[in-house]
Length: 216
Image (cartoon, rainbow, N blue to C red; front, side):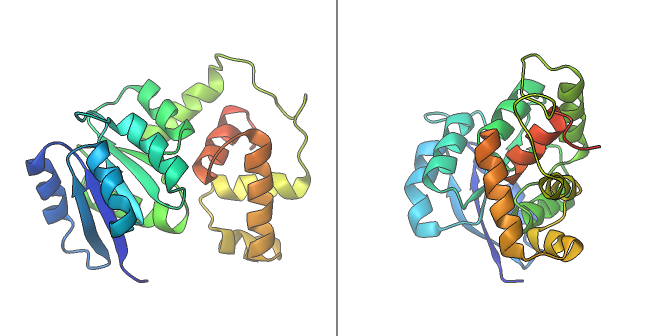
């Protein structure tokens, strides 16, 4: 695997440097950009071209929430990993529905941060136990009416199998092998489902599927 280029946005320099230092032993990760806030991050993305961003939420100027939305709109191929002290489930659901590819607490071990970076780079999302608990809670406590398979939304057996394997953290290539179809067909099915469900990426598709009981 080639080096994964990483950016970090956090207004505390000591924390930024600490994260970079804690991950320096992983030679497949290369930090290419540091920023104190969202404005500084966005200004440097075109030149740095990171694959993954470690994003704090509370920052002066443009905060992490607005910056995540901006990155998703302007640079949809860049993956955003929220790295914050906020454990409030409202932040988790809002960020995951608006472009974040994973959500980590600042208390996470460097090994988990490294694992999350690798997974969002290879799979498009990272769901840890913290996020999964929130997703499961949301799936059992729906606060708004969302279409289900029994109403407006109808999906084929092939589409349902793609969703199921995505939720099992299979990559597109692994899904293609399992289903004996091409990876291009898998991506086409994913794109069609994301457009139909109104989500923006694979993590949004997984999030939607869990909330609406589209998987067994």
